[in-house]
Image (tube, rainbow, N blue to C red; front, side):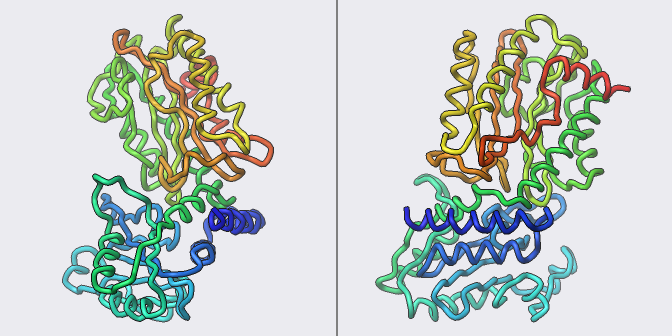
Length: 422
């Protein structure tokens, strides 16, 4: 707990310092500061972190933890942190392969310029990792686990696989779980990170507006998806932060509906859960629209219940409460309205580099944390569901709705549809 407290102090200082800087991600200074904060919190041992990203249509994208500490999108890259060594930060990059580069593009050579550009004390090839590890293990027996935890039935992460091999070959070494260190760091957003989330939200709003202009009976859900994606890219957002949920009629009651192959029909509700991504930071917004441009009486009543739950839960957000408190407030409002059995999902999660960002949900909220609030009520038998979701920043005195500009009042949503179609 002492080390976690130290991380909070370090990160609070970084947040204050970054508030005075221009509001964008400073490369590589930001990542260097994060690594320094993590090195101080670890204090001893060595930590190895593998890039565990995904291939996209435009190339490889690192996972949240690796990007947070390095700002490097490079398949096969490895980070080594050694708090007590002379060289404390080493980035390992895969060896070059001229033939492969003919297909996927050139990769940089190791050079002093590259080291300075990425902000590292040393950059090596991955083939040198064993040699560096053995040299460091002469001075410590602690292997620090800093990647996110996985369940007992989950896959074995590469860092734990490496650590197991080391323990077999280097007697006396052992693994220390420090995964909460980077988790705690990522929960507290700097001014630059908040600015990136706000930009992602603004792009999402304009994309939704473009999409609404295309809503008409007979249009396919995937066509609306295409309008959203094109709008995001036109605005400079290369990626969606998650696969969008665009469902009409009964599909609006399916939480992670993905097929998007139904036609929009008159009288239906259209539920859109979507987010753009900016500088790796995610937005996560849900709005529910009447296809006809106006809610019918039953739809309007349920919409107002969900909106009341959203407002009530958002209104209690402040430092010192937990996400569970927010969830309980949502459930209280919906239970009092008589629809608790129609609420079938959680209603508050952290937001950041991942749409469901890493977090300790037992930790009380602190200034700089960003969470979503997303109540919903679903009636599969009546073929409609309503969900409304906002992204909310915890401030020193309470909260600020980062998605405040996106209409949520029923009359404002109806007016938004009219404006979008002009």
